[in-house]
Image 1 (cartoon, rainbow, N blue to C red):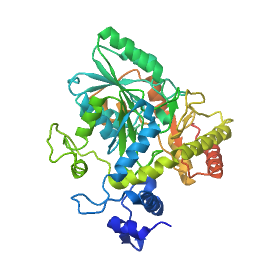
Image 2 (tube, rainbow, N blue to C red; image 1 turned 90 degrees about the horizontal axis):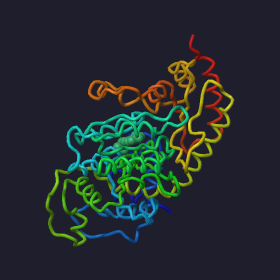
Image 3 (cartoon, helix red, strand yellow; image 1 turned 90 degrees about the vertical axis):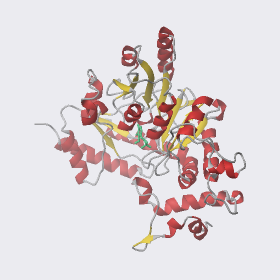
Image 4 (tube, protein in one colour; image 1 turned 60 degrees about the vertical axis):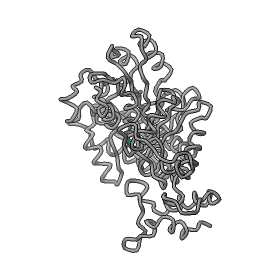
Length: 425
Ligand SMILES: Cc1ncc(COP(=O)(O)O)c(C=O)c1O
């Protein structure tokens, strides 16, 4: 039996209530809709590590960093310890990429270019700007494959290119072997290395050629935000097999300090120095505890996403006004989202509103980054034909592991009806 009272004693915040309902620390998205699940996950974790509880008088809160250390080990194993990748938690992909990209600060100068898809979440590109570098947008392949186009990447690599950020759209792996070859060849031409960063926010558990997404490049960045496949509410991680980058990211995520409170408690150091202008990008102990439970469920929930995706594909296959991307792809997907592309004849807003009236939430992945007000004038981009076309026609239908096949059928029925009502005049 889980001892909720003991857990509440360790985390007084979990004892607070509002209108008789427990107040949970996490207040966004999916996580907060299931407060009991959150508490149970934390409770289960603390029961599991009961033996490891360090009682005593510490300057740290009790238990601090146990969850962190354990989840680190488990994730390292998941990513594949064979590659000896260092796992460093951060407060999200954004901060992960930022901390990481700052690791390149010695080689990134104003005017340096980083190639990146525009069909991504804005955070991927913001991280490049935080480092003072300039994004150069790469087009996607088209409506069937929404990952970045290697031929456009080849054309846009220049003397100024210092790094490339690849995003595995929807958890469908980008062609990493081809991308690495391309960067290697360009690097040989310019007589230097071009860094490769993976935004694997959509891709925990996805792999290509038997190797997990996130471990192909110099660095891989993951998000554990509440709408992701592996959820801790907020948070993320960076993986790298470079000792130098691991050291740098570890410094940047915690104020540039050479040792942290836990290490000092364990006797590894007595004081510390500050050697970088760092940040607080740390994951909390509670998030790490949640992550351990979530990691245990990842394989099963990715499989559930796959089954639901296959059912969607089958049920929507006879509709001529939509196409479903990634009918073919290499490797294993994490099936993060279910995107569809509407034909030119369908009015997207009408379609979305028609589904909304039936209580079905949709989303758009993504409004292209180069078309946002902030980016348009600062970083004008042309020729992103496929990105712009998909940006106007994509709709993301509901997909999460708690859905049932009946839910999928309901959505598909609503999609059929909505298409009929949304034809442009
Ligand atoms: C592709 C992509 N990159 C980056 C991020 C940012 O992640 P975080 O909010 O954890 O920093 C997200 C999150 O939504 C994302 O989907």
